[in-house]
Every structure is written in structure tokens, then in C-alpha cells.
Image 1 (cartoon, rainbow, N blue to C red):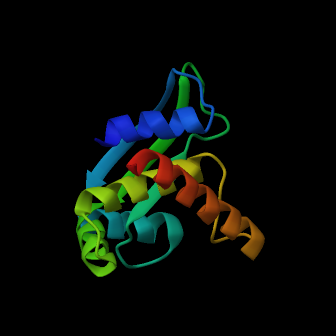
Image 2: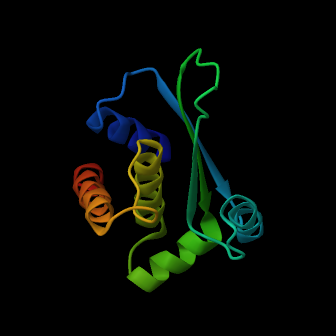
Length: 128
């Protein structure tokens, strides 16, 4: 399910057919450690994205890595009244948008809204 969703989203964002990314599902303890190490936030989060470094020797069209916290995703799904699978898809789309240069935290309200609008647009396309 996540692989097919990623393929659809990458296509909608006009990436080449050979674009690659990794998707890793992790427990709260792991994503909490990652969140603390890389963002200075000592709590589990739902998704983290790491784009390839600018000096990464590009042999392929490798976009980056997405880590989804499954425990947090389960809690979110229950809180939002949606299926766990739909929450995983939402987090995957969110992560791909971050890898594509969208941001909602370290930017203006206008840029944050641009990302959320694009996320809603993609979700409508991939979830229907």
C-alpha cells in the first residue's frame, strides 16, 4: 500500500520514474530518539524526513528517507477518527512533501499553508 502510494505521489509531483526513497516504520522509542537527536525535541513524533545531503554522490535519483512512527500514527488515527492505513498514507505524503522542499515549521504562514494545501490535494487524489 505505501509503495503504491509513494509511486502515485512522486508521479503527481513530476518526479522521474526512477526516483527512489526509503520508507521505514518504527516504534515510538526509536522515533523519539531520532527526534531528540536531529530536532532537539524529546518526544515521539509521527513522521521524520531526511533528504539526501547536497554532497551525496548521486548515482540514482535518491530523494531521501522517511521514518513513520507507527505508535503515534495509531494514536493519531484514533484521535482523528480515520483508519490506521489512511493515517500512514497521510504521513507518507507529508514526508514526501518535506523531501520535495515543502516546509510548515521553519517558514512563513504562507509557505506552511502552501504545503498543507498541496498535501490535501495529493491525499484527495491518492485516497480516492
